[in-house]
Length: 93
Image (cartoon, rainbow, N blue to C red; front, side, top):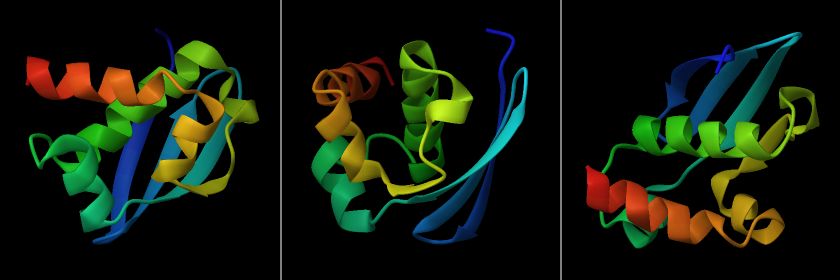
């Protein structure tokens, strides 16, 4: 993957993600402690979950198609296989 990801924590629940590909995009992502725990049982960090989630999204669509601002929970509404992927990420860590 030639795409580069840069993740900066703005606050405990808010992250800014920069994707460098053919074009550069920025995304604000919200991830609550409750959702992290529900999804991963705290087996991976917020930053790691966001990184893996963006890699997942970039396999499905171009960075310019990813919403510029969203809560991580919405990914499963667009891609039902997302939750299964998260479970496998947690098992492999």
